Length: 103
Image (cartoon, rainbow, N blue to C red; front, side, top):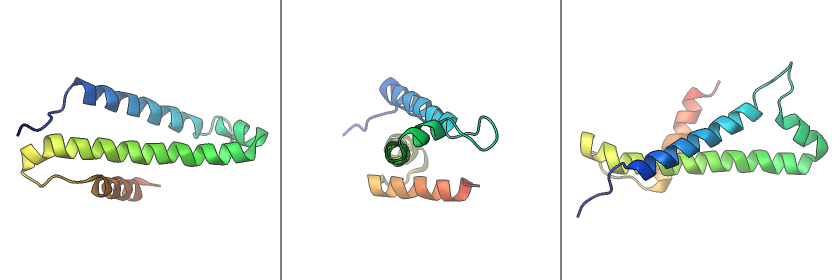
């Protein structure tokens, strides 16, 4: 049985994930002083702002885990002869990477 290789669709999905990640990051970096662009949303409607933050990061985590799983199973299993992983394992890799890189 032939495994799915990394192809243009995978790379396009990764590109759009990176664009989304950049858009989220740009909304949460301070422009002036301690204010960030997302603060204007929170000022207008705190509930929408809070739910939006949770949704942004949930999408980033889930999307990152899906990409990690696909990359691992399509590329790393062939190159390093490691076993395939499932979504929950990919999510834990993403969470560990975040833990080690967070300031």
